[in-house]
Image 1 (cartoon, rainbow, N blue to C red):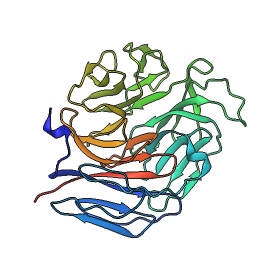
Image 2 (tube, rainbow, N blue to C red):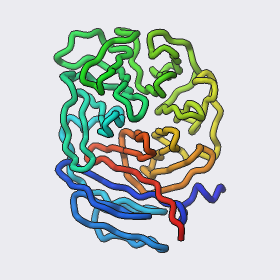
Image 3 (spheres, one colour):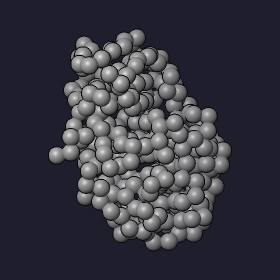
Length: 306
């Protein structure tokens, strides 16, 4: 077994958990920063556990869960995105919301109450794509097809496939666009105006980095180097349920809720457990963000030097 797939003491992952109404703490190297309580646990060589009755077990590094419910509209998350200002956006069953990761405060973005499926975008930009279903106040065809926003989700325009396609997963790097509607992949090089058939593969999550298109499939993580037309299995990858990445590396969460990080997809380091998160994204600086129904986690990889 690849030893890097196990917990390591020299490369570890620290987490910040922020829930509604919380503040943000601090920590270094291998640490857990908990916003609901001003508690910081420092780790040097050995892992020292913080006392918390809700703390799940973990291997290299750990997280402490503070179950403070988020606003009700965020209870069903379909996607996360970091915009140009560094704000975390969440696509939900009832619209688009911003999350202040320092305080946990959420706010509706724009006027739409649509069901935002497949929310995506080039990290660190206000250019977004989404799909889904019209909300109670909308008379748009169902499904919505591909929609796009150039202003961080304040307004949306239909690009294509209105009334015919519901993309459950979308990924773009600002140039290429890959989408899955559960019947194989579709690819586009013009922002989703026109589409071409991609690989005939079922995916649960998609992301695009400079090294290719990454997908979570029933057979494990896979990578495409031809824009999504074909995929090669990545046997070194853990059994991921979610994946996200940028030029700064990849983040993943497996089915048991453990976080993994990788610089290139060839070798992976295991971090702490965040539990049943529903969405994952990466910021342009390499920071990861994962969200569950009751909290959002800021994921920071730290390389100890001794």
